Image (tube, rainbow, N blue to C red; front, side, top):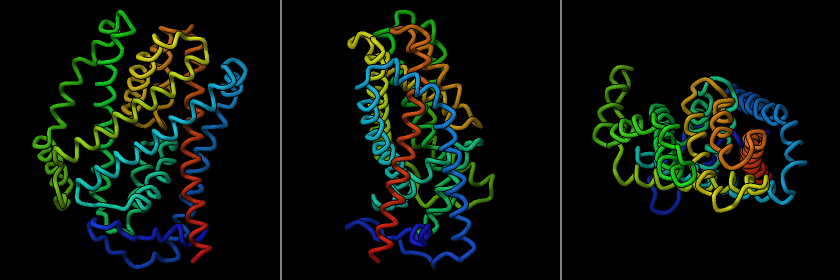
Length: 326
C-alpha cells in the first residue's frame, strides 16, 4: 500500500474551518496502518464468504434483476451515512472536507465486521490523526452516531410498521417504551451534560463544542434518508421474492430500520450478526414465507458487505491514483 494512504491529505473546502496537518507519520505507524487495513479487509471478506451459500441460493430464488437493482440504493445509503457522520463531526467542531471524510469513514466501516464493536471508532481515531481531530471527539461522535441511528431507526419502525402489520403494537410494544427515553437523551442540553460528565469521569478535556439542534437535525436528516434507502434496498428484494409491491413497501422500510437499529444495539457482535437477521426475518415474514424472509436477510447482509468493500476499495484506488500523480 502506498504511503499516501497513511498521510491522509488535508486540503480544506472553501469557507470551512482550518485543519492544519500534523507531521507525517513515522515508519512504525505507516506499517501499523497497513496491518490494520489488512485485518479489517480479512474480516470483511470472511463475512462475504460465510454468506456465499445464502447468496448463491438467492441468485436461484430471487428474480434476476432484483439483486443488481437492490445494490443501487445500498450504495447511495452509504453516501447518506457519510453525510450523517460528517455533519455530526462538524457539530463537535471538527469540520472535514468531503473527500477526507469519505476516506476516513469508508475505510473505517470495515471495522464493524471485527468482533468487539469498537474497531470502526478506533480506525477513525487513527485515520483522523492527520487532521487535528481530537480522539475524544471521534469517540463521542462514534457513540452518538449509534444513538442517533438507533433512535431514528426505531422512530421509522413506529411510523411505518402499523401500516402493514396489523398487530405491530403487540409485537413491538417495547419500542414505544424505549423510544421516548432515547429522544429525551438526544436533547442537546441533556446530551451536553451527559457527555461532559462522561469526559470528567474519564479525566479528559471538555469537547471543543457541544451538540446543537442544527447539527443533530442535519445528522438525523441524513440518517432518516439512510433508512429510507436501505428500506428500498429490502423492498426490491421482497418484490424479487414475489411480495406484493404496495404492501411490502412499509414493511421493507420499517422492518429494515427496526432490524438494523436493534442489530446496532447488539454490542460485541460484528455488524449485529444474527440479531439483525432474526428481526428482519420476523418483520419480512408478514409479506413472504418465513424461508424467503430468512433468505432476504442473508442476501441483504451479503450485498451490503459488498457495498462496504466497494466503497472502501474505491477510496483505496483514489489514494493509489493520487499517489501515482504526485
